[in-house]
Length: 278
Image (cartoon, rainbow, N blue to C red):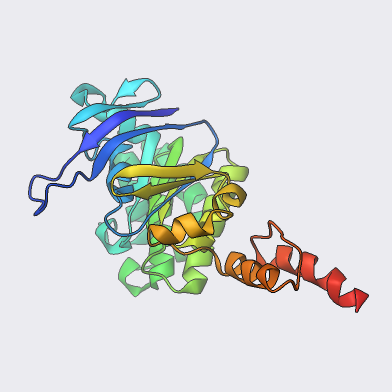
């Protein structure tokens, strides 16, 4: 679906000579949920913008459904396939009425009016914002605004949804709502999700985790595989999820056997039988 091959990129106004991306090669398959994690400046958001031709490689190639992002004639077709939701929803909201904002993208693509109405209704339903269709976006909470931004992307009917640190400005409730939508779109609708995040807890829900460091891919694998490499992650200034840190400490103290638990529920399943034995 998406193929990134030996991509290099540097920002022209960068104060240092470090490349934002250096020799990045990555494949993203149909229906995958991929989390790309890394500290600030690791190159993860630069990589996200490569996926729908917002940024073009200095060298190497990015192809989306066989279309080279460097071919300007294909840019619109690529952006129909790959939709991006950014960190600040205010940067993506362009009208004063929610339903008009959600319909803005399809309208620009020349979708017939009747079809736009249907797409807007379905997109708002998908993000749980139907009751706010006639509301003013500026009156909504940050989490609600982000759901509207996601609805606007979904109305375009993309095959790939990219969340570029889309939860970074949200409170825990807003973050959970956005993650729940991403999981639903992936599992129930088959949309490929690429989630850029600094929060290791968010990466737990992905099928695959790609770890970026200094413009390169440092490691990749399933969440269980990646989060068993806690020492390596800490060396590149990344944490592990809270439950992983807890299980490491408990196992180190000999209180529980070594385990692959990643979530609160999985930790409970590990610990409760031990408590019952006592």
